[in-house]
Amino acid sequence: MAIDLSIVELHPPRLQFGGASAHSDPKAGLVAAGPFDLRFGSARKDHVHVGIIGPAEQVAAARRWLERCGGEIPVLGETSLLRRAFPGFPNAFHKTLIAPDQSSIALSSGTNDDLAHALQGDAYTAFQRVVDLYADAHARLAARDLNRPDIVLMCIPEDVFDKVGAVERKTSDDERKRAKAIGRARASSQLDLFDMLDEVEQTSEDFLKRDLRHALKARALRNRLPIQLVTDALLDDSARNQDPATRAWNFSVGLYYKAGGVPWRLPPTGPDTCFVGISFHHFRTTQRAIVRSSLAQAFSSDGEGFAIRGQGVPVEPDQGRNVHLSEDQAFELARDVLAEYELRTGGAPLRVVLHKTSYFDAAERAGFAEALKDIPIVSTVTLVPSLFRLLRYGAYPPKVGTVCTINAARSFLFTSGFMPELGTYPGPHVPQPFEVRCLGPEASIAAAQDVLNLTRMNWNTADIRGKWPVSLSFARRVGGILDEYGDDDLVETSFRYFV
Image 1 (cartoon, rainbow, N blue to C red):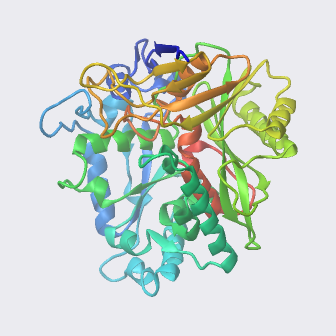
Image 2: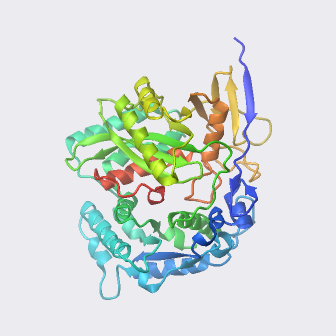
Image 3: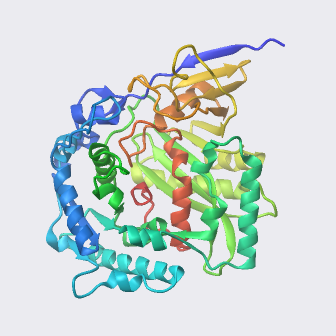
């Protein structure tokens, strides 16, 4: 049987910044035109107020790092398109960083070391004491009416991470059985050694452990004050850490976004769109019952993101990856997403695109269709990491944005590969594409372009390399934070609290 192959190379996403020019590389765009929110004019503050919490010596080191980010940081060694000098926070973001002494809280001193006391005893008990210690200090900063920080740096020493970065839960027999079931389901769905699903889906290790990052972010969510964790990997110039310029770029973009800024956005080339990633995670209710909850990560066309937790999905014995919502659950989740979108943007979207890593069954399609019946354009897109490979002549793999369609029926999108913007392929393995399966009025090429565009909308880093669309890339992390948050209603849904 003849096989018909069609190859299309999508246009690299052209991101909008503060000036009129568009760029595909966030670093180049910020240097040339500043952040997108320069367009907001007088509504924009001229500084970012940073709070700092941690042991006294690390607070001092974080303050020195902020001062260092205020100026240019050259690249160590040869400059390349991938490794760019950091121009200084004021030059890149047109704001200054301020960290007043009164916005810093030291958890240790020469006469009193609360952090050392919290670390005493077994790891699980110490974990909770450490979380409470940082969270209580954070709550003091969050409670201020005046001089309230925009963001707080949580400085975590290496010895704290070594002991309580991740601790074993006190689990029941049922929970241990559930973890084994998750492991079996994942083993049966493994595609190869470099399976990309590991990056976004919950693992049995996630289920059996508590994670310090997730616990602190959950407490910050309750206090409605974003945080950024700071470790020695950021503060120290050592051979095992990234070079200082790269660290400054990634740190500064994440800090700027979490503090309320808009670093860049996609150009408005079509109707107002809400992109929604649907995933599932386990969490424990206050009654220690285990449910599998649906999760929606939603993003408007301008990049504003939020997270909505849906209803619990019954956990069946030996349940695999293909978890599905009932018709009513799909309806409720889509309705909640629309309500939050309208609250944030002032109106309903004209287009909704739903992303998932497993297929949409008939009940889900019916529920979503009913909830979204007043939306002119609705598409459901399944992204499945594939064993398909494509080779090209020359030293490099296919370009990022290459779409290969087989027999006009199956389309494969490469979100990693050769990057003309960098002049190289910045990866260690043969690129693994997604199979893009689209149901709705739009073609698979349009769906693939959306996915490619959304890989550049990770405002937690300046790195141009992104394999997953932002609608799905943080599912594992968001699920972990919501597990630590518990089953209370969310006081805040903004994505700034989850990245």
